[in-house]
Amino acid sequence: MTSKLFPYSPAPESRAIVNIASSYGLFIGGEFVEPDDGETFKTINPASEEVLAEVSEAGPRDIDRAVAAARKAFDGVWGSMSGKERAKYLFRIARIIHERSRELAVLESLDNGKPIKESRDVDLPLVAAHFFYYAGWADKLEHAGFGANPKPIGVAAQVIPWNFPLMMLAWKIAPALACGNTVVLKPAETTPLTALVFAEICQQAGLPAGVVNIVTGAGDTGKMLVGHDGIDKVAFTGSTEVGRAIAKTLAGTRKRLSLELGGKAANIVFDDAPIDEAVEGIVGGIFFNQGHVCCAGSRLLVQESVADEVLDRLRRRMSTLRLGDPLDKNTDVGAINSYEQLARIRELSDIGEAEGAERWSPACELPDRGFWFPPTIFTGVTQAHRIAREEIFGPVLSVLTFRTPDEAIEKANNTPYGLSAGVWTDKGSRILWMADRLRAGVVWANTFNKFDPSSPFGGYKESGYGREGGRHGLEAYLAKGK
Ligand code: NAD
Image 1 (cartoon, rainbow, N blue to C red):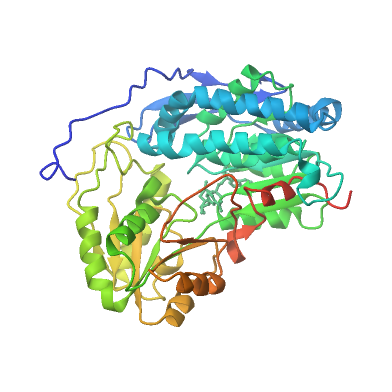
Image 2 (tube, helix red, strand yellow):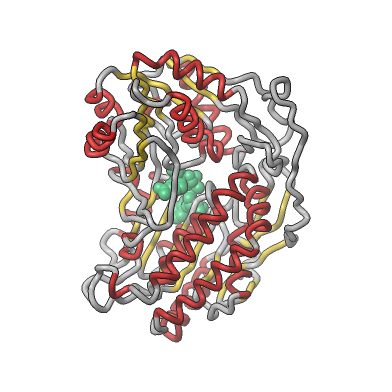
């Protein structure tokens, strides 16, 4: 987008560090096995549509096998192992992730389409940090505030989305294992590869067979897994629609459930905010990871008196974003993860225009192959517009204005979701006043999209229930009342 302003030479990260097999089996009982009915599917690079590998599709007998392997490992070794011993494995996994992080970052960018500077500088450091953090808890659970003698739940079924494949895996597997549970994890169908390399890392770390099982496949595989009688707990991250279906499946059973679902966060800029920093925060809030972020700041609420200035500077800043090859270290905006997601972003953006909002994107050449959408803002948006209510899950920002703090709160909370929010202001008292009234699991002040393993994350309302991260994240994996 910026070739005239700043001519950057390409700086591609080498993909030679990654060794992608032509096909992958399922990881069950500590080894890679063929799927029972032999079904496979392809995973592609969304930036080029090149096939990366054939991946197995787990069917009902495979799910039986994986759950049985996890049960055997729970009963036989992991559930009764001391926290101190479990911690050694988790620290070992964390160290191997650290050592292999360049390889994993390149693989994540290839399979997901996200810029290498994000997978390298955000995803992978957080993945390793998550394992280090929960390794530290494994032998201290009795001090976590969940009873004197906390016990694991048993076998956890974990289903994750495609936007942060390895990070979502870490958020699920690290606390589960630290608490003494065993897991069967299903990665998203468009991004299975880093989970399969993680399976290799479990082997490399000498993790006892069956403690971690990885079953690949699409929605049907996930449905079989969460509905399986042999599991004790479901942890799901994904869309509110699927979360709702899972909650119905589990209603009335003894299985525990935690849900991390969608969002439509307000990023609120007051007239006393440092405008240049706020503009960086707006850009990071919605264009980070192509806007494929559950807590993305997809609704900008800007105080009317500074709206023109903020929008001018935002447009100028957006004109400097570089869209293109995810493996290029200069790239700010990578590829959209799948054709289906691109179609959804296009559809909702067209609806935004049809409903009367004004659309703007910087001049931007999109590559010929692959799935791409330019960073886009809509002004003249009202609360009634679908682009202000529905999760677009792409690089599309809806801009609304407000006059008073009360109006900002009312508009920010006028959503079925409640995952995150951002507040930009010079006044500490206003930050606290706003944070008190915003119905969102996380409220960032003068920053956005900041994550840390020690900090709990989760939603209100249709954004789900339960917390991941921090001491709170242990609760989802400990039995109640024992
Ligand atoms: P999705 O719900 O379509 O799929 C998520 C996962 O569920 C995938 O692995 C999919 O194969 C599986 N799945 C699909 N149907 C299923 C079923 N009936 N039973 C069991 N599993 C099933 O969501 P997605 O498009 O992959 O991800 C995007 C969504 O995830 C967005 O709504 C986003 O906000 C949300 N998300 C939330 C968080 C959070 O922490 N709250 C984090 C990341 C993403």
